[in-house]
Length: 454
Ligand SMILES: Cc1cc2nc3c(=O)[nH]c(=O)nc-3n(C[C@H](O)[C@H](O)[C@H](O)COP(=O)(O)OP(=O)(O)OC[C@H]3O[C@@H](n4cnc5c(N)ncnc54)[C@H](O)[C@@H]3O)c2cc1C
Ligand code: SF4
Image (cartoon, rainbow, N blue to C red; front, side, top):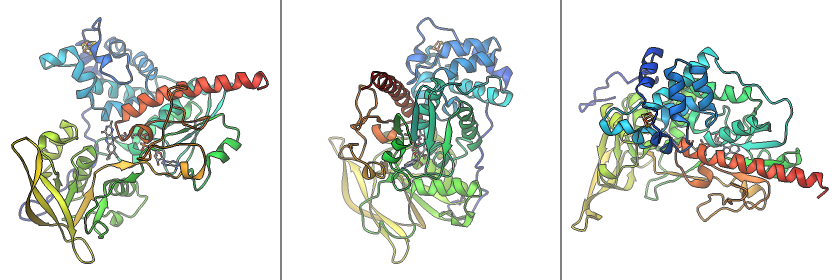
């Protein structure tokens, strides 16, 4: 990162900090758990992990049993242990948190999942006989959850993924310093061991349509394609070279770190003055990544510190790493002739009714790059190349409650961000778990009708 005088300091590491529990520390932490009769930690978990039970198994030193209990609810424990907003969920709800020493449930989950993978304590075997055939489009948390849950229930599952590597945002969005790619790869290998097949580099829509997938004999299709289209800011200069989308920037960094593109193609370079528009988790990830590339990064936000949507922990880390924040600044235009040279914003203020309004005062700052982190929406590649799948006015797929997650087309289901708008890993998993049950019910009914000659 560069200091106030423009001097470039040694960039921070891209690697995830190794702050995992040692086995001794994990067991000591597990022993602090009160094994509450009314486990409020579990109520706080969107996928209702059996938290006291896996902690009790760990407290006895039985990591394999703890891992088996976790696997009953989740296919991605090593991921969730790292990126779930625990402070708002299980850890925030833990009875001991009120006294300021809540159980570190996320780190325990991470320890159990990592230890199991390294020691290969629990084995997964593919089913010997299949009860149905399901295609899953997209391999983010939603697709992986549907694939894992249905494989465990003896379905033959094939995943179609447009990227070269499965994992969705876990691989191409969340940066390495928060989630090591090897951790995601390990989780995917476990799902593969359940018998799930992965077809990568296939963009459903242009490369193969939903109708063509059905023609291959699939009983049901799940769409878990997330939100691929970034939102743009409708101001002058938005098409200038140097105005980037956060998703593109983070993906290029991930590809360069995996040596799949040349590092010079990463659109932020050492010494760049970078402004990130948007103060959610994606904005924090983009700013913290830019700092690691040796840039000086500031977040520009039209509201105040109190209203940011990023997790408090992410925001605090961004500050500690040197990300600067410009509050109450509403971007009006990007400046430059053939490439970006700066941005202009209007200074906002809070009026007597506590409403935010413009002051009419304009400020200009020099910028080498602007990164837009103001949200995403679904692409229409699948729905526009087939019939019968309805979306709402914003492009999100419409689904039913019975069978859970089915779209307006019979046999086609959807879940995760493509239905519920960008949320969190665990919320995409929660919905996907319910959709997996809906798919199983649908296929069971379909097979029964087929047997009856319908
Ligand atoms: C930068 C960033 C940081 C985040 N940080 C966190 C965090 O710390 N904690 C947290 O809980 N959540 C976080 N989130 C949100 C979380 O990652 C998402 O809510 C979650 O990944 C949604 O899962 P999904 O499976 O619905 O979609 P995605 O993860 O987006 O996966 C969709 C997959 O579908 C594939 N696909 C799309 N179209 C097609 C097609 N036509 N054919 C084939 N494949 C297709 C895509 O390539 C992708 O692999 C973050 C998101 C971003 C962008
Ligand atoms: S609320 Fe806290 S102390 Fe009680 S069972 Fe859950 S993790 Fe243990």
